[in-house]
Image (cartoon, rainbow, N blue to C red; front, side):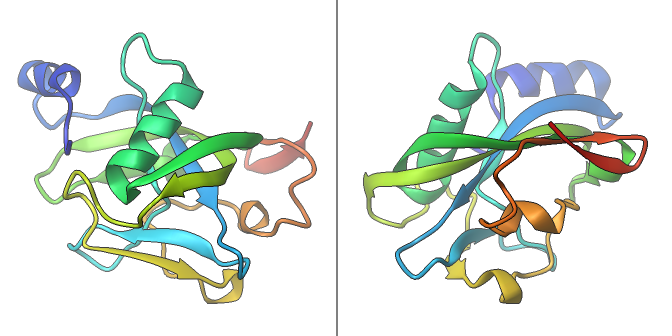
Length: 164
């Protein structure tokens, strides 16, 4: 689903003005240790499987729902990798809608499913080696893609990444 009823109603009130959007994103690896990236089909940027948290939804529930909608895969959140946001996580969609994401990133295990876009948001889904990752729409820190550096949870504090 490209935009939920909740966000459609909100957009009807505020137009394209900047809104905060609590969100989730997934790091999914295949057996070759490649990470799944999603291309929406417009522009030059890729993304992680990700999406907005809906009212009444816990972040892990939103993650499971969003990953399935965008990839056809059923996942289990395994580990919290970080919480990211701020001005660098602002994005303007082609229709002019402005958002500032607060993203909770999880490492997940793939439980089952066939890699296919369910909701039509993904023009391409591809597992890619970390060192070849495409240009992303949001500036996720590089360490979340390196499974050897994700033993800790990170958060942003005054333009620094703090390990917790």
